[in-house]
Structures are given as structure tokens and as C-alpha cells.
Length: 216
Ligand SMILES: *Cc1c(COP(=O)(O)O)cnc(C)c1O
Image (tube, rainbow, N blue to C red; front, side):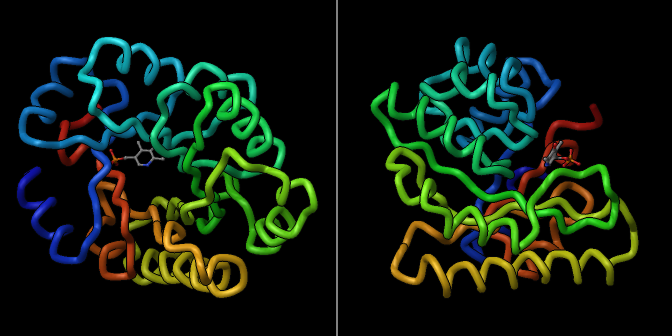
């Protein structure tokens, strides 16, 4: 399954984030030994514990909601934070990145689903952040693109529309704020149940868990 997913993604220059949350280190090593290096976790504490024991060349992506008081623990090593949804969080990431003498790559998370429970910005909210004077002072965060989670539904039309919405937001932000920034290129969308559609709609980072690791 892993090889099949990766070959389909590589044809479109997209990358796989293997979502390893709840799975133990030995299962992660199995996937690692097949050449996988990007792994996604949704809880900082779990990611921290796994990072301490697993190979150092793993790139850890934080894909779940992040509270400001948890940033400090992952700032030394996190490769990409997918779930930035406020200026306050971005400021804290910047502060902790500076303490670690590094720049932390981030994605802005958007609310594209119909469900109200999912986190994320609106396009207006993102514009507010990107135009605010305090954003322009941040030196240790780098915004590399956008992330979104679609509605939990089997309605493929709706999924397609939601992914398209995220791609449109990406295009708008790229044109207005990042047209010269090569690093602004990631669209993180698609999970086990909808990754084919997300890939067709332009995803560059697919966050796939159960299809690779089995049910949680
Ligand atoms: C768990 C999770 C995934 C992966 O879900 P699967 O259905 O197991 O592929 C993707 N994105 C986020 C934010 C998650 O929390």
C-alpha cells in the first residue's frame, strides 16, 4: 500500500506524511525501513516521546491543534507545523524558534469543512494576520502554504468543492503575499478516505494514517 501511494504521489510531485499517531515506535520503524521519512503526529507530547527514541533523520510534522504552551517542547526539532490558526500562536512559534536559533516552517490552517468543530482560519482571518504590523516583525517563522481538513462525508462532490476552495485560498495568498517566495508552495490536504480526490485537486502534502498503519 505504501509503495502504491508513494508512486501515485510522486507522479504529481506530492509528498506523503505518514500519520503515525497512536502507533508505537516499532511500527513507525517498519515504515521508516521502507524509506519513509516524513511522519505526522497530532499531539505534541506523543511526538516528543517518539522523536526521542526514533532515528534523527525523521522529519516530524505536527498536524493537530497546537496550544501556545506546547510550542516550547517541540520547537527544537519540529520540521513543519500544519496547524497555525492564529497570530498569537505564530508569535509564540517565532519566539521559541528564535530561542532555538532556527526558523520553523508553518502552514496556515483553514476551515474548509461544514462541521463547526474543526479548527481553522477564514481567508479574511489569514489576510488580517498577513497584513498585521506584528506579523511583519517575525523573523523565525516561515509560512510555506496552507492546510485544511474536509468534511467527514462520502459525498465526493462536496469533498472536491472543499479541496478546490482550499486551492483557491492558496492561489489568492500566493498572488497577494508570496508571489516571489518559492517556499510558499504547500497545500496539505487529503487523508486515508479522500486522498485521491485531494491529489486531483492539487494537494502537495497528503496526511495518510490508517491506510498505511491500519485502523487505530
Ligand atoms: C489523524 C489525522 C489524519 C490521518 O487520518 P487517516 O484517516 O488515518 O488517514 C490526517 N490529518 C489529521 C489532522 C489527523 O489528525
